[in-house]
Image (cartoon, rainbow, N blue to C red; front, side, top):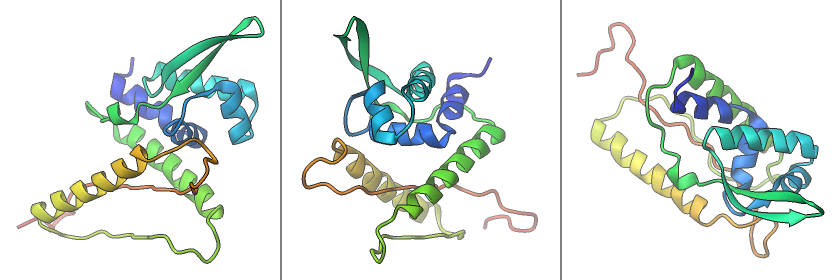
Length: 177
C-alpha cells in the first residue's frame, strides 16, 4: 500500500488532474462546472475529482441539493500541499512527465508575440544562493496562487507557471568542494 506522499504524487501525475488543481485554486466548482470549463464529460471530471479527493489533493467546500441529487463543490487547498515523506524515483518521474506534457499543452495556448519568462539551467551554485533563489521562487508561486480568481473574472488574464527546482547529485569525479 503506497504511503500518503506517494498516493498524492500518483494522483496529480496526470495532465487533466493538474488542470483541475489549477482551476480549483481560484474558485470552488462542482464536477459539472469543471467538466464545462475543461471541455470533458461529466463522468470524466467526476472520476478525476474523486481520485484527487481520495489522495487528499482536494477538499469538499460545500454540498447542495440539485434536482434530487447532491452536488459537491470542490476546492484545492494549495497552501496545505507541502510534500512529506520519501517518494520513489519512479513516482517523481511520472509526475515530471505529467508536468512536461501539461507545459507543452499550455505553451500551445500561449498568446502569440507576448513574452513570458523561460529559463533552463543546470548550474553549480553555493547553498546560500540556491536557498535564496528557492525562497524567491516560492514567494512568486505563492503570490500567484493567492491572487487566483475564478475563470474569466473581469480584469484577469489566464497565465501559466511551471517550476521545477531541485538539487542534482554530482556525477563521478564531480564532487562539490
